[in-house]
Length: 351
Image (tube, rainbow, N blue to C red; front, side, top):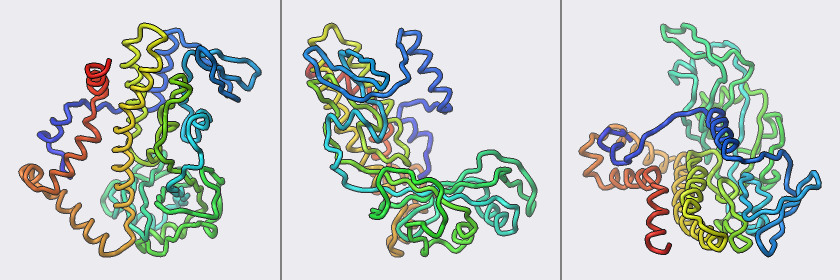
């Protein structure tokens, strides 16, 4: 879809590009200045107490807490105290394939066709190649075009498939393996992509469990899940903003905190506000994954024609065409969400 300025203005948001390590450093500095004490250990047990919760740590020490926040990722330890770990509804298979970057005519021809060193999407039988990135680039001349080439030994391509692989342990990384044991059917891949994959040195497989959306607050409001611990939003897709929204929602709610008697109400408000928002994000992201992974040729053709039409659409078409208007409405729902406004509306109604 063409993102015209008039359309982007409706998001009413500024976009900031920042490296993850820079953001991490800034947040860590902010927490330190606010008096946060960092303990580099791991939790062994969480117990509800009369006044809050107790966390037993691996160094044999104990933390007495008013609130425990489980921000420990997709394989969350804290989540096991709130939701059923067996509530798996889907497995998403992601395979990182390592390609040798020898300077050969085949590899150069592929780069010329891509016009860049980063692969976007190649359709295949029930799978999609999401991206491929060299870590460090140099430039050379081939057919008169500047081409990014990588000086490293491998060029990584990520293949994603919304299918269940029964013979692979779920939610685990099995290390580098030979291509002969790749559990994905790549026979339907574009021949040019197959020629690259056949030159691969190995692959690394990850299977993500997609869990049913369950409670994200437990222990009467004293144990809270945030980020990937709380939501089964696909790890390989875009809405990492969901994690920031969780933190922003908690911050906005607890800015009104006046006493411990409010904890239960505020944490339940957090769960209520986040539940509907994350459900929409999950549906949107999974539907996008399915769309780029269509196996049926006819369905692929319909999708390709539709995508081509959106790229050629004028601003007036984006406004007046029913299907394009629906696409833009979904973008607004996904990326135009205002956390502060959601909290303020809840507070006005129930606070």
